[in-house]
Amino acid sequence: MGLKTPVAFLIFNRPDTTERVFREIAKARPEKHLVVADGQRQDKAGEAEKCASARAIIERVDWDCEVLKNYSDVNLGCKKRVSSGLDWVFDTVEEAIILEDDCLPSPSFFPFCEELLERYRDDDRIMQICGSNFFKGWRRTEYSYYFSQYGPIWGWASWRRAWKFYDVEMKLWPEFREKRLFEDFCMNPEEAEQRQGIYDKVFSGELDTWDYQWGFAKLANSGLSITPNANLISNIGFGADATHTSSGDNPFAALEVQKMDFPLRHPAFVLRDRPSDLKYVDEFMLKKSRRGLKSILRGFTGNL
Image (cartoon, rainbow, N blue to C red; front, side):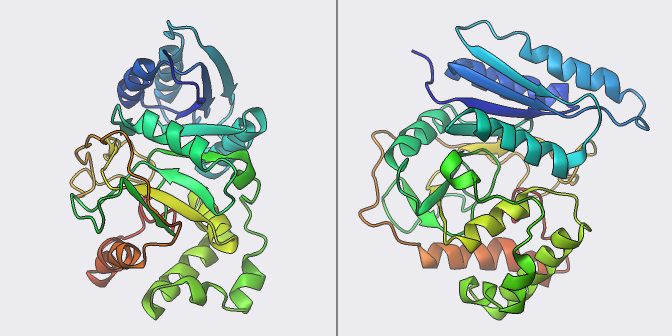
């Protein structure tokens, strides 16, 4: 039996990683497959061929599946292509599992997302289901997942009811900033300072990205994300060809995926796990900036 939840797949110019992720999607056999692709950059020799090769992989769907395509003939860039593509996804379906071409999922990622999409479908407190866990085995509870106010987007799922709050231009940020509302959310002044700096750059257009805006949408609406207590996604896209994750020796490159045990053990309460969030902030957001390293990786802290 195939996966009933639609799977959205965001691709560009990396047929090698696209192939590996596609194989895992094919094993899940979704009944509906939505594909978003950006066009080639005119100043990049050989990119047209790479884009064509990546798109050709989608033609190999050989299971009973409705394939919907949203392909751009021109290069829109990360910010416009992903945001417009996800707008199209959630205009088309009520909920979806979302994978980019470098996010290699564990087989248990798909049933994990599908079960929780159904369980929290009508719970407006929950805005995202994540596939990544960077704690390498550390956990506070024996539940299968916890609730967080942070949400990496290396493999995730959501609903139209949550995505409707997304605004790629972050028009509410000036008022939010003026009233210092983000300080109530942050764990400490250091996080508040970093967050303000990032959002200022996104709002001004200095950062060409789409994901911080999603983090802001969740922040502005008190939204929670679900984080699995096992890592279900390996980012295989670190390297010279990547748009943002260019360091192949990054400790978060190609993290080992783990198996999620079923049946899932659901938390008894829908509450933010503050100790886990504090550990996340200290170890993955602030420690790198203290060391003078680039802490802002797309999809890692990009979805603050």
